[in-house]
Length: 111
Length: 117
Image (tube, rainbow over all chains, first blue to last red):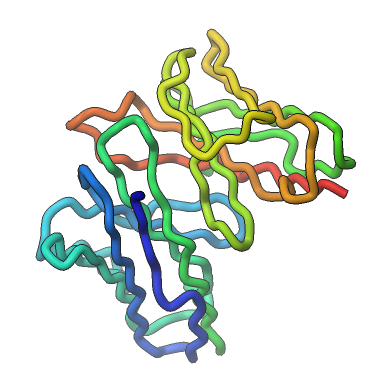
């Protein structure tokens, strides 16, 4: 059975800290890994990764994929209270099955 | 705003009842996906439609059904509701059927929160 596991499940840090969120996967027919941010309602797209070792960056957020070890990390530097959200990792298997999501990491940034 | 519209936003009903959730995908998107999000299970894929035809089924119960209409909007029907069906139901759309050239990115609606009492 395809599996996506995120850790930690919950994380509380102070504003200005750097955080690293983890996502590991055991799936067949891997095509890409995606990160989403979910604040109050709809998940919004952050990154899509297909190749190992190539870092994707957007402002203070960055992500990298290791296809050999089957994991990805999402880094957020100089965190702000607006970064508080659930961060979802999902794997696209290249078939017709949509995305397989992990349970998410609930990140809380305290002022 | 993702461009995906879901109604209703909130719905409270009793056990044993039936409800219909509605989704309008982004303009031009042919694929519609339904997901269920509960506190303990995370986002679970239910079903996918592409241009009116069912393409894939995930963890969808037999009490649930969906369809996509010629104008590409989709409806998710939930019947014989149980307490455990209380969840946030998301619709998402993407431009085309999954193929080797797609990225897998989905555009999510705001969700319909269903509470079964």
